[in-house]
Image (tube, rainbow, N blue to C red; front, side, top):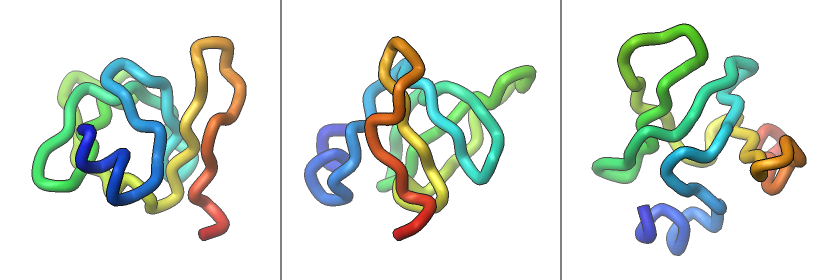
Length: 70
């Protein structure tokens, strides 16, 4: 995940809340340059590009980084 943070300039961390293309979830892991997100209500994690329509939230629910307009 450190590689994704450095190369993509995003604050991704395991367990972090995110919103991807309007769906909320939590970062479960990272592999091959992709974040694996377990969406709310889902059973499995799904690969997501770290800069494609992703909003990263801090523990209080505040937006840390928003890639929707990039």
